[in-house]
Every structure is written in C-alpha cells, then in structure tokens.
Image (cartoon, rainbow, N blue to C red; front, side, top):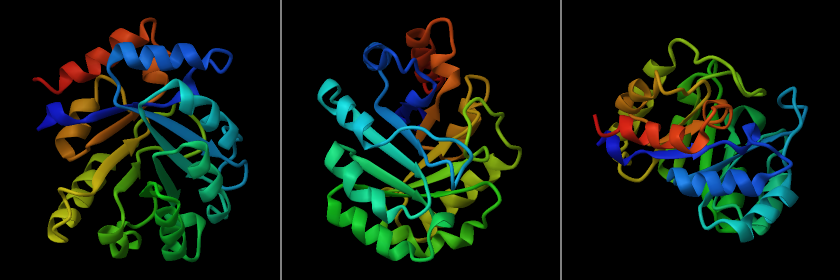
Length: 223
C-alpha cells in the first residue's frame, strides 16, 4: 500500500546551526526516519557529516537514524557510526572490493544493513546480497550533492529491484529506499514503482513550511 511508505528527511539540507529545529520539524511533520548523508570528499566530491553529528542527534530523537555512507573504505566507519547511535548503515557497492566483509561488519555492529547503488551501476552487482541485507538504496541522482533533479530511468530501476526481491522471496523483508530528486510531484510515481522509503532533502528543508511539506508527502499515499 502506498500509504505505508516511510519518509526520511535528509538533514544534509537542514540548517546545521540548528539541527534541533530540524528534528522538531520531523516530529511535527510525522517523518519516520532521519536520513544522514555521509560524504568523504573522495568517493564523492563533497564533505559532510561524521559520527560526532550522529552521536549528537541520538539523544535528541527516537526516530530511526538512517546513515548513508558515500565513502571509500566503508569498513573503517561502520563501528564508529554504530557506536554513535545509527539504526541502519548503508554502504555503496562501488566503494569496496569485498561487499561481504562490509555486510558482516555492519551485522556484527548490531545495526540494519543497507546496500546502495549509483544510477549507472548494473543492478546485477547487488543481486547476490539480497538475502543478507535489510535495505536497498536506489540512487536516483549521482551521489555527492543535494538539490539535483531525478534521473530519467530511475523509476524503471526501482521496478526491477522490486521484481528481483519478489523472485528471491525477500520482498517483505528487504526495503527499497530511493534517494535523489524526490519531490511532491514525482513521489507517487516512485512509491508506485515499489519504494518503501523516500529520502527528501531540499524538497523538505528548502520549503517555506517543512512541516506541512512532510504532511503533504504522506497525503500522497492516501490517494
């Protein structure tokens, strides 16, 4: 059901001088998750949040903290983010030569496991791991910057991931998360394609009324 999707506002687009306000807005808007974009200025051309920010968020929210690591050598950051309070840690299939070891590390750290895939990466690369993970993060922009437009063809990729999960009989256990260019005008298309979790940054925190915008996202699921 479309109405059961989760909204994960990305604090990358929030006011970093007042993250408590962003958390309060997420509470008031009914968001389920908080999405934390981690960039290392190597895997992607930007530098953002580290474990200390997650550690500062953790005591101030009961919401699910969804950490998306866009970093090389992701294995080095798994334990620091888990100890900081992450509920889920997602790494990029393109960032490691040994995805299995990263999956094992995340599991050992006690958090949910996510694998992310860039728009140009064949979906076949993540298929061997579907029975070991909790989440597939389909990037609908090239990772590195907020505020980009939704890439044509992303909806078809979401549908293909959904079909693969069905074929593997894990569609009820593995969530599909979509990140990049998600706006009110295309959110329903993404949900209908099979997305369980929508990441939205500038669409929410760049809006005049972030709280109402979150509520408007959820209204889409009722139509």
